[in-house]
Structure formats: structure tokens, C-alpha cells
Length: 84
Image 1 (cartoon, rainbow, N blue to C red):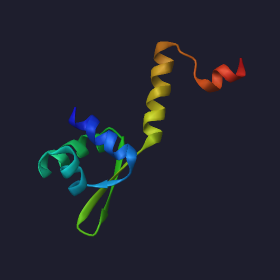
Image 2: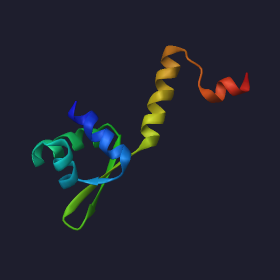
Image 3: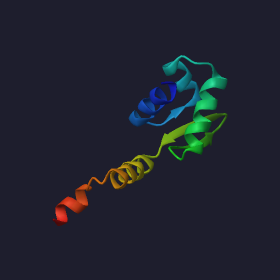
């Protein structure tokens, strides 16, 4: 649930760890831990800005996941439907 809240926040705009702490209400170590898992999954990208770490959602990762799920479930994507 916490990672979903982080993803929802990052869907609005990039955010620093401090901003995510304030939004999510978790401690800095927990927010950083969740960000590490999201980064490992390829869903976010982080960069240093001064002393802060700023996270950015990678929408292309979600699009790739949707396409993967469609293939697994045998559901045609929008591009395939347009060709039919």
C-alpha cells in the first residue's frame, strides 16, 4: 500500500524524499527502502539534486507491463485492434 501511495504521488510530478515523507507519513528509512524496491523493479528513476534525492516515475515501465499482461492474457492491444 505504501508503494502504491508513492507511485500515485510520483504520477503527479517528481518528488524528493523529504516531500514523499511528508506526503506518505513514513520515516525516511522506510521511504528510502520503498524507493529502492521501486527502482529495482524499474518503475522509478532517482537523481541527486544537492543533498536531496529526487524520484521520477517511468511511465514507459508501466506501459511495458500493460503490454506484457495483454500478451499473457491474450488481449489485443490498441495498435493490434487498429490494424484489424
